Length: 252
Image (cartoon, rainbow, N blue to C red; front, side, top):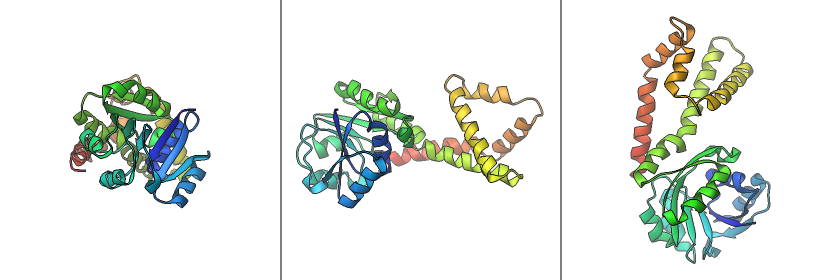
């Protein structure tokens, strides 16, 4: 079984490891042995646990999952040059990664939280020599898309990387609305989950505008609710969310 080494033991690393644990041997590098043991417990499989101060990255395939502002500090504590460095850090440029870790090949990727259920939408860019290997690895946790520039992956980060948080807000708000009108919380949650499950399949093959038009009959209930969303500026707010998140990637 091929080995993959994670640097970092946070939520994103755990989500990706959940998707890879059946096909890769997992090593995790971190500062705190107790946190590494907790990571192993949550993952449910045995991992190789390495303290950061003892880490040697020579010739390894690395998944970098630390906070962007910790990259330089972490790189100084590691020995050896990795073969392939795949970063999941928002806004951290290929140039910075290469300067810090001097890998043979470098990839920037942006998975999302859905990696834990093998349903991540992951975008990638970087050294084309590593394109197929990186795509193959990250296909293990969902769908992948190779992009041609770092600007594009910064935009995609704002959409797919941050997107689960936006959709969670919408899901919670719709559920609260149903409860406000008198539906039991448990029934509202089940209805919302069924809605998202079905919609997730439809959106794979149909344009959003066509789906909306198929539901909205003249002077009907959907038209009334849709009008309220437009009055509340939901469309503009969603577009603004992408803009703000993209701009944030440029200053991380």
